[in-house]
Image (cartoon, rainbow, N blue to C red; front, side, top):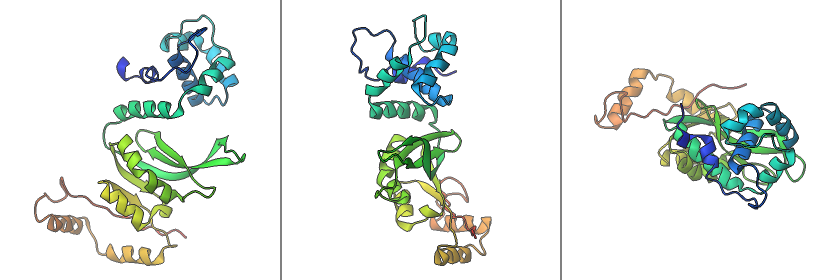
Amino acid sequence: MTAATDSLLNAFQQLTDPRDPRGVRHPFAGLLAVIFLGLLSRQPDFASIARWAKRHWNVLKPAFGLTRTYAPHETTYSRAAARFSVDEFRAAVARWLSRMIAAPVAAAVDGKTSKQADGDNGEPIHVLNVFAHHACVCLADWPVGDGKDTEPEVLKAHLDELLTTWPSLRILTGDAIFCQRPLARVIIEAGRDYVLAIKDNQPDLHEAVVTAFADATADSADAAVYEKNAGRSKRGGSGATRRRPTTRGRR
C-alpha cells in the first residue's frame, strides 16, 4: 500500500490554495482530488463531476479529507480550478509519479490530437505525447503545429526538461517521423537510448540499415560490442549497449 506521505492527495496538499480564506468550506487538495479522479472517470465537465461526486460522496469524503455532509456544487469545483497554478500542479504530479516509477522506463513519443480540448481558434489541439509503456501514464505533452516546430523539433527542444523531470526515463521509441540524425544524436548525448522505425520514404537510410544488418547475428553483435570496449565488459553484459533501428518497410 502507498504510504500517506507518497499519496497523490499529499502532493495536492503542497499546492498553493488561491482562494480567499474567508468562507472556505472544503479543503483545496480534496477538491482537486475529486476533480482529478472525476476526469479519470470520464466526467467531461464540472457539472458531470459534481453529479458523479454526489453519487459517490460517502466514499470520496473520507478518502480525500472532506468533512461536509453534502457534496459541493459544480461552481465550487469550477472556482477552485479557475485560479490555481497549472505549472505548479503539473510539477507536483510529476514529482509524485517520479517516485512511483523510479525504475528505468521506456516511453513512446507520438503526435496526438485532443478530442476534449480546443485551441483559441476552435480547432482541436495537436500535441506531442510522451507515454510510459509499463506505467501506462503520460509523462509530458507539448503543443505542435500552427506554425510551431515539427514533432521531432519539439522533442529536441524539450528533451533536457523531460529527462530532468523523469531521470528514470532510459529509452525513447518513435515512428519513422522521428528517425532523424540530429534527434538521435541529442538522445545519445543525453545518455539515453532510442528505438526508431525506418520507412521506405527514406530509401537510402533504409537500404543502408538493411545492408548493415544483413549478416548480423546475436553473436556478431556481442563480439562487436566486446571489441569496441576493448574487453572491458562481458559479452552482452553490463556496459554493452545495443542500438538497433527497426528495418521494417511500410508500403
